[in-house]
Image 1 (cartoon, helix red, strand yellow):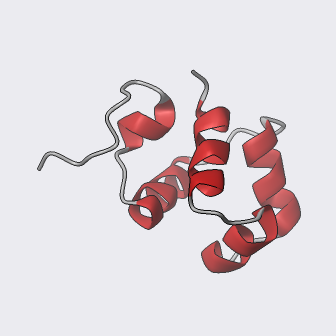
Image 2 (cartoon, one colour; image 1 turned 90 degrees about the vertical axis):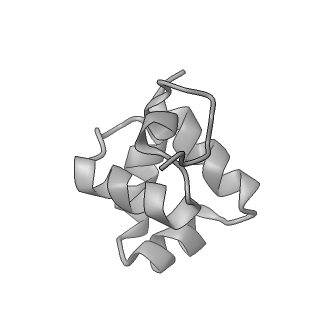
Length: 72
């Protein structure tokens, strides 16, 4: 699974719109949309920010595991 789909799924699971998450993360809506739609590769610091925001692992966002929980 591509990280773009995971980014979208996490947002939808949190019942947030793209505009709401962009505002919460302090970024432009157009930039967030590009990341979520796969039009632009998200930078690593954005992935870290998302992982912290949703309390999931970076591996989950990257699609390397289906386990959202942090085991440390």
